[in-house]
Amino acid sequence: MIHCKKYYLDNGLRVVLHQDKSSPLVAVNLLYDVGSKDEDPEHTGFAHLFEHLMFSGSKHIPDFDTPIQMAGGENNAYTNADITNYYNIVPANNLETVLWLESDRMKDLAFNEKGLAIQKKVVLEEFNETCLNQPYGDVWHHISALSYQEHPYNWPTIGKVPEHIDQINMQEVRSFYNKFYAPSNAILVLAGNIEFADVMGLVHKWFGDIAPGVKPERKLKQEPKQTQQRYQVVGSDVSATALYMSYHMCARNHPDFYASDLLSDILSNGRSSRFFQKLYKKEKIFSYVDAYITAYLDPGLFVIDSKLLEDTDVNIAIEKIKDQLEDIKLNGITIEELEKVKNKNISSLHYSEVSILNKAINLAYYELLGDAELINQQESFYTRTTLEEIKDLANKLLSDDNCSILVYGPKVMV
Image (tube, rainbow, N blue to C red; front, top):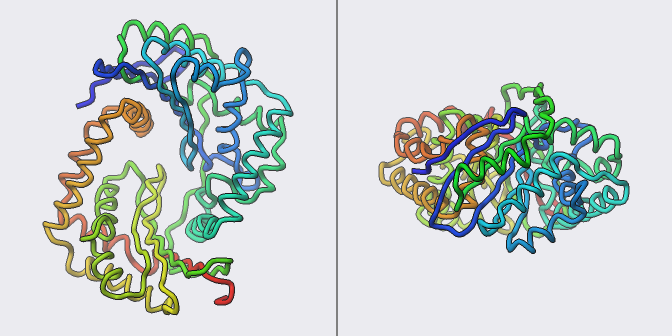
């Protein structure tokens, strides 16, 4: 059980505190409720670029990393479709250094053309390296665009095209910052060797006088129900054909989420999984086959990801995968399969609670979902999932008219 205290500052900043006296460290996590889904379709890549810009210096701190390192700590950040998250871990007696740093860039980020140019170059190089010049690097550009016709999950976090990033100007940067990087749109978590009264005073000291901003009102286009199977073939400079099958599934906060997660594990988690035993070992047509979920905050995707051995017929590969799905839809799963994946998930949950940094990150995420206390309910959500729920979910989810198929292979096949 992870105990925490929660409160709001007058400016709307949500604060979650968790005491763990077994550690000499404190983890500080600052989550901003902004991701790539909050971008304009014609101006993508903002959220990810801004993650980089937040390390470029603020009014009183020209270099963010050096003070952290001098305080004996580490820091980093990540952006996805739904959130931007900054995390730090330092010795407990240097906690105030982190609060000073995070509050200064929330309040007074330094804006200058040189810094913007440098970070744009960094992100463009990342785009080229990870998407354009790496085998299968742009796969999620195609999966996203094929699976989502209206919702802004239509593009990956890094952006649709490099030109969108290259064209970002200072006025747009300031507008994005003022809209999303404010106390009313953020969650601050402190976890570790803390005394509640002391850290509450420090939080008020460093964040209490920051203007609240206006909590952005999301008006995202909702994805209409898919009514027929979609199919796309993409040729690229790759050696083997990859096959992706994506199915629309529920949002992260939906009760079906846990059955979806367990179903993906039954199909592909471990050497005893159905895909490993029935497709990888038996059929000898796949070099790799996996199933996973995106866990988006809005309705996400259940994805089957595979690579085919040379000369494998794509249609046969699709048929073999669908045979496995149909078997679960018709016959369900065994209690042994369900207990195995439940135990694996519960073990992972327990392991994640060992690290104060993981606890800080997770507490912020669950607070965004509605209540940080949800962190203590995840095990029960998995354990109470039934065989019937898995079977019903498979029949609701894994239909042809809910499926988008991407075949990504050597150019010669197109």
